[in-house]
Length: 81
Image (cartoon, rainbow, N blue to C red; front, side, top):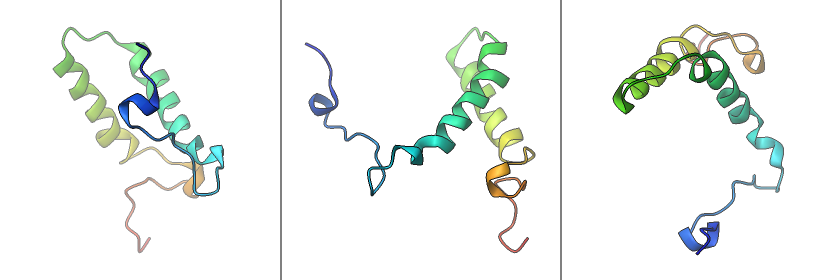
């Protein structure tokens, strides 16, 4: 039996207007994650991989990496900045 969205009760990710471009920021994030981390390393265990992914996302991506979509600020910058 083929597993489809309907079989598992999932709904396709589409914006309120049906605009598929709402996914672009996430696609960009996952592409960066794969290029900068996933394709560079091989982990022996799943916990090691999880720790590396968490470290990349919370230690670098949200804390230090400047993002053009938010005027070259980091995602965790204070809202008063």
